[in-house]
Each structure stands twice: as structure tokens, then as C-alpha cells.
Amino acid sequence: MNRPWNRYVARARRFENVWLVLGAVALGVLVPGPGEYADVLVTPLVVFLIYGSLRGIEVATVEYRSYGLVICCSLVVSYVLLPFGGIRVAGAFLTGDALLGMAIVLAAPTTAGSAIIWTRLAGGDSEVAALVSISSLAVAPLVTPVVLSSLLDRRVAVPAETMVIDLLVIVLGGVALAVVLPDRLISDVAVDRASGLAILCLIYSSIASVDIGAIDPTGLAVVMALVVSLLGAGFVLVRSVGVRMGIDRSTYLPLFFTAGLKNLGIALLIAFAYRSVMVVVVIVTYYVLQQLVGALIADLA
Image 1 (cartoon, one colour):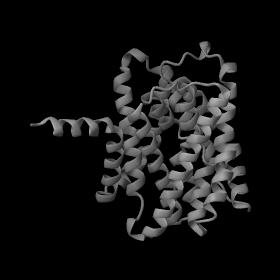
Image 2 (spheres, rainbow, N blue to C red):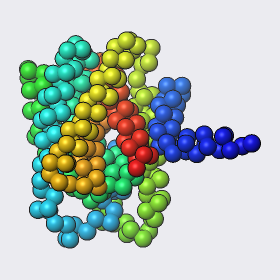
Image 3 (cartoon, helix red, strand yellow):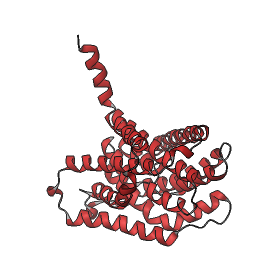
Image 4 (cartoon, rainbow, N blue to C red):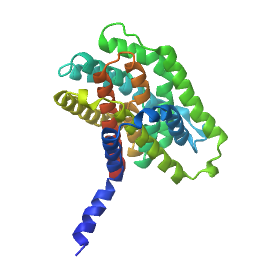
């Protein structure tokens, strides 16, 4: 008698990561109060995600030449094709602060921790994801301001100095943890679970920081449709590039995650200079939807 119910439960459990992301979103909407205290945890959480992504990677044995083409492809998609193609599409539907928010998030570097964790959970090559992510973060202080200025066709005030400091703290902090803490001290399962929890905390904090009452539902729906379209187009593009390059699934998956998933912290750092709710809403919407896409791919793997 319980077989139909068990079948539904089994199907629902297959999308466990999706439900967790949706739960974090709902919690941020319904219980936003503690979100202001969670903001101070953003940097430590991202540092931990970087640490989790670097575990087990033997730098001395990495053949960088074999990953050079993949790294270049990811950077081109992330900083050229997706931003400039995406802003042309977004410009047909968005204006003002909404378009500014989309430009900021498209110009941001990859969300290293999430990209690597979703790659690992989806069965991709996490070493590729780690190398590409670190490369994206390394060039961000130089590339992001240039890309953002070009997208908006005007000079934009970007807190480059603060961005450099934050990036150094995040990357060097993650590297320091990976060097100091031996792999045997914490199991891979524990790190993966803690990394998933860190992503959920980042989602909750970002949602809780938004004034839901100030959001135009119609405008939000347009933004969501655009983000889903851009992520879908990005996946198709990366998959096509993968076929042409003759790379397998374990490589084109991290190529997609590192090229299409954007860094929430860096994007918000730039957005806060404009003091606009809609700019923040667009960035948070992109971040949450990209996490849902990552969770869906991981669950279907």
C-alpha cells in the first residue's frame, strides 16, 4: 500500500540539493531577522569553500599545460561571451538599476567555492574547477572593472582596492587552511557536507538582506526569466565547445560551472556603492538561480 508513496519520496530525494536551496531561500524570505548577523560570516564561509575545493590537489603533480586551453576557454566565456552577449539580451528587457545589477553580476568573477563543490557533487573534475576558479579570481581585480565599464558604456566607479584585498583574503585564507590542515584531519564526506551548508548560509544571508516589499513582481519575473535563459544558453555554449574540443563530461561540467556561476560577494561589494535595492535584487536572483541550476545538475548526475 505504501509503494506509490515510497516512489514519490524516492523521486523527491533525488533532488535533495534543490530542496535544500529552496529551503534556504524560503527561510531568508520568512525569517530575515538573523540575516544581519550572518553577514559577518560571508568571508569565512567563502574561505572555507576555497579550502574545501583545494583539498587533495597536489600542486607539484598538476600538468598545467594540459589545462591551459580549458582555463582560457572558461575565462573567455566568463569575461567576454557571457557578459557582452548577456547584456545585449538584457538591454532589450531591463533598464536603469535592474540593467546595472545585471551588468555587475555578469562582470563578476566565478563563484569559486560553489563552482568547485557542484563540480565535485556532479562527478566532474574538481581539480580543473579549482585551477580555473583560482585563475578567474586572480585576474578579477584587473578584468572586472574593465568589463563592467565596457558593459555600461561609461566610466564606472569600482572599488578595485577593496576588491583586491577581499580576493587576497579569500584566496590566501583558503590556501593557508589547505596547507595547515592535513587531509586526514577531516573526512571528505564531512567537508562536502560542510561546504553544502556554507552555500546554504550564503543563500540565506543574501535573501535576508533584500527588502522583499520593495520588489516589483513583474520586474523580478523578467529578471528570473533572463537569468534562466542566460544560464541555459551558457550550458549549451559550453557543451558545444566541449564537443568541438573533444573533452568529456568530467571536463565540460567544471567549464560550465566556472564560466557561468558568478561570485555573490564581489558583485555585492560593487553593488553596495550604488545603494539601490533593485541592483541587489538582480544580483541575489542570479546567485540563487545559479545555485538551483548547480544543485539540479548535481542531483541528476
